[in-house]
Amino acid sequence: MSLQIGFIGLGIMGKPMALNLHRAGYALNVHARRTEMMQPLVEVGAIACDSPRAVAERSDIIFTIVSDTPDVEQVILGENGVIHGAKAGSLVIDMSSISALTTRTIAQSLAAKNIEMLDAPVSGGDKGAIAGTLSIMVGGKVEQFQRALPLFEAMGKNIVHIGDNGAGQIAKTCNQVLITQTIVAVGEALLLAKAAGVDPANVRQALLGGFANSRILDLHGQRMLDHAFEPGFKLKLHQKDMRIAMQTIQELGLSMQGTALASQYLNVLVGAGQGELDSAALVLAQERMNDVSLNDAVTCDYERQK
Image (cartoon, rainbow, N blue to C red; front, side, top):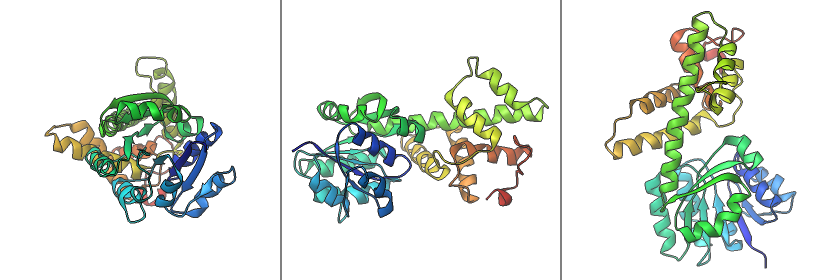
């Protein structure tokens, strides 16, 4: 029997990642909370399962990518969770972005049943998931990383074993700290140009050719100028990641004011009901604070932007 792969969570990221595994020739067993999300995979030959447990019963390696720490706990350790269906020697790979501490606890629970685990959160957004060019940050045993590497290579390009269980999640937290502050910096730079009477689009174009260039300036900078905030990566999920970052910072007794400020912008926007927008919409909070809009055709008023 060929290697059986389970995939749980078929949202903006999970669906294209699972499709890339299918294109690489792997047999898939899938589950999503909403049954209609499984249909694109079923149409190409995947087996739809009615629970995470059922996925695990059919699979040798089980991927999970869901929204938040409690969701991962439920999917893996819950009443109909993976742990109750997985065979001894099978491998669970969680690609969600969650607490490193919880990841280690889940890994211990699985290990008690001789089930292996890797944490392998990703960066690259929906475009990277579709193109199969994700950056994958992996925590867990080296031999399990090697076992999973061909599967990772179907979904990503920059694949790095970081360390033991939880290390992948710490790397993802570092990733989000850097990305969030860069988005804030891009927003401030473009708003500074606009307030000074200089075309922010021309400023962005100039900066793209210098040391300030970044993918965030390129992609998110253009989204800011256009006020094109279709996700991508939703603000409410970004807020969740930064909540994990702030908890980790506090647990370690650190002071990181840039991270704290960026987190507050996210809190303001999600609190205003804009959590479904793309991360580039962080600029909306900055526009409101400064009474300046990068897009003259769009009001800065929150109520009218909902």
